[in-house]
Length: 174
Ligand SMILES: [Zn+2]
Ligand SMILES: [Zn+2]
Image (tube, rainbow, N blue to C red; front, side):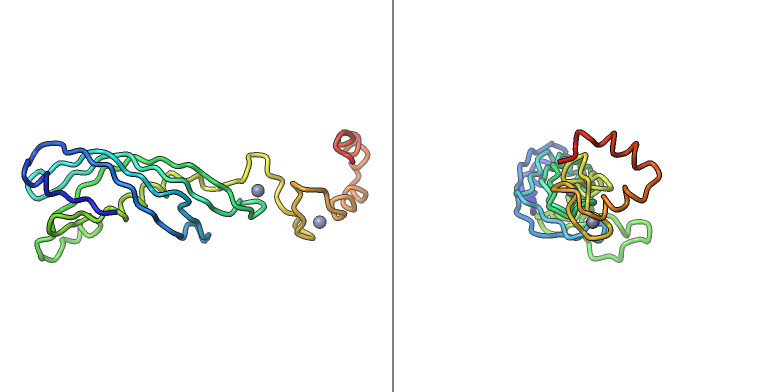
């Protein structure tokens, strides 16, 4: 995702609006492979103050990731505020404290890393396909959203609370 700042260079100190979209593919997050299923949108304004470009805007994406419980694809709409300064790369070695600051050269900013970081920070720590996803049986791997497997029934029979449990579950028994 690239931002051409030619207009901002001509009008320093003035907020210049921008509206960008870019198609991103797969990414890694918390050990999972995720995918941006729609083009990522980022719109806002930027301003040049001396050689530093201040970028402010809102990024939006729709992310597909495996459900934390059943591993089926889960979808999350995510929106993030981005507020970052890009320092012009003048060829000098960056100071230690500036190491993680974004830089640019010429008249184009590369925004991917700033937008990606902001979006991934907004993702919930566990993404579920639905709030009440019942997950997979840890014995046989059956998807408990589809049906109860026999491991669950065996457990119930061995459980001293089985009588109570089966009373409570009566409505759900097929
Ligand atoms: Zn699930
Ligand atoms: Zn099972």
